[in-house]
Image (cartoon, rainbow, N blue to C red; front, side, top):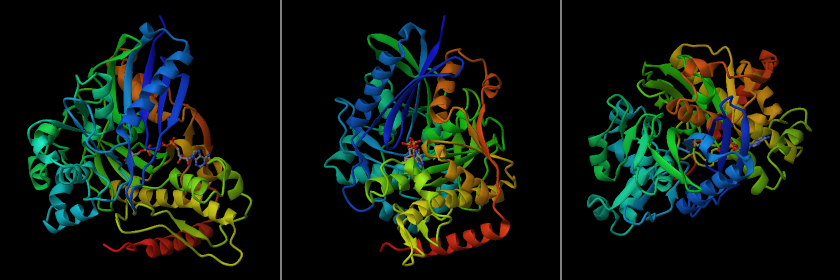
Length: 495
Ligand SMILES: Nc1ncnc2c1ncn2[C@@H]1O[C@H](COP(=O)(O)OP(=O)(O)O)[C@@H](O)[C@H]1O
Ligand SMILES: O=P(O)(O)OC[C@H](O)CO
């Protein structure tokens, strides 16, 4: 009998469903974009109901198109945009507020207060994270502070909190499972990554009632059953999208790393059972593993990756499709001295500046749209270089190669520039949907499709390798100007 696994990949800009067979062939992909809400400068929201409807919509479409029998589906794996925060009524499943998205900066003031209260070291030590509006905890506090009666109701046990995995699982299981996994919990800024428990001190500091939090489980086990066309299918894998991509890239051993070019860019290195503390602005987080083991990862989170290309497309209207950026960037021989720092929602790793804002600098009378497009693509690679340098300094490991994936990794110009500017070979796999693949692996391991990670390791195959070819003098000159441009973008917004 054939066996299939369904991966639900709930990203920042779209919901995807990918059906894999047991040989990791993609049988069907369905994708639906959903609405982004920007109610105020620096605020980003999603409609939680649209998250569910778009995800269930693509699930049904994929099953319809794939022409498979549901009896042949062994399990569903969920992977998701992380940190995004949803609070809903236990009794009705109705959200009390829109989802506050990971990119949203509205809780900067709450973060400043936590820092003034001397919580920075404690939070870093306990959760592995720097205090930033990026993470879920201050977003929950904001909802409890601003939605009428929310804190009292949460204290009475009437409201539930979840990241997107938890919200999807709760809906898929019709309210039976209120669960998250270690990888998602490790992004909330209130989870102790050593004891694997919610941290009472942080909950108290933010006034978050313990009873609204989900149970935390491993990334690969049975959480409950989803009903698809009347058939019960086990939901058996959950991981935050970046940890899922690390798993999907078969980075199972310490020292193995990947970079994902989606809305943002996220570089993660598996550090095995060792918890590596960064001295260079990176985060410590929990990696996805099969049940029974806990691995850690060190992470560089860049807020604007492919999203800067979306901005060129939707707001600047310089291009019609993201992929066109590759063609236009190569219509000019170089960046013409133009640098774009896409600090639209502040700067993440390694700078952590909530008040930085986007800037385009180096403009001359000869600057063209093509230079700006090129500068936008190059900015993705420079930001990645910044986190790669930090990671190599922290771990004392010089990466021999960088595995890449995500939407913007399709861009050959970007990948070559990445190899050039980091002096590191870039390896793009045949299956670029590694985020979904990771979730499929996790669900497949829990439902007996694959034996262990060794069996999975053999499935990684190369699509294209990009070797560094830029002369050192040019690389150094470009990098120097990038740092200058970053210094101009920092600390712009008034606090
Ligand atoms: N060929 C391309 N060149 C540059 N950027 C691209 C290309 N294709 C897609 N992108 C960008 O990649 C992002 C989508 O990647 P994806 O992995 O689907 O993101 P997410 O999971 O965050 O929603 C978009 O921001 C889009 O602008
Ligand atoms: O939706 P993505 O793929 O850009 O990922 C978002 C990250 O999980 C945010 O931490």
